[in-house]
Length: 311
Image (tube, rainbow, N blue to C red):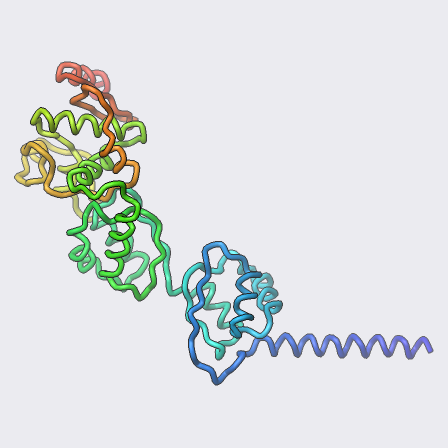
């Protein structure tokens, strides 16, 4: 009798194991090998494997959400599931779908930091998507310098250069507190000159004060914008000859603002350009630690130079 019980248990587990293995391998196969139609499948950033599995099963793209999760955890791929848009088909095997979700996103994430110029945007884009021609992007985007909002974006691999420029300018329109050219130009100067948040409104005040007196702005960042080249878009060590370069962007030679923004400012600099600090400062300098020191007169400014720069 006992022998029969053991035999029954053995047969039960053997059948269960066989069915489990069969179920596992069936689950690996495509839902419908003949259905080559693609379905757009979007994975939001941070969505866990459980929800992805559930949605794949509901859309008829996989046979088992359990086996999907099992493979993800077995291969330690939880942190490799990408956010973005994917094209998946019922004709794809489960392993092919997982491979696509971990390696083949049709979108890419890209962050444009505050204060970059169009050429730097082009370099970042080309690094993310080698199919983008840097020269073509610069040509399309240069007229919108200052209005290419710095932010983090999810961009389809197939997006055109024109579409990317449209995305950046539309984001600027939706997030910027101003559309006024003068303010955007000032914001671009602030973005390049301010090392700390507390400096933005103060630098803004200096710019407005000098403009009201008809004084040249003498903003080093405008010279950097003129002479910057690939590999060093914002050269730090400016010579006396650099300050004499004949260019409408040279704020040492030309009073008033440069004709266009020199960079793409973020929200903080745009707000500072709209709300300058009310001071009598006309000068500032940055010491070796990146701290700004302000002065209301040339005499005071020269004292700051002696104190903070000529040590």
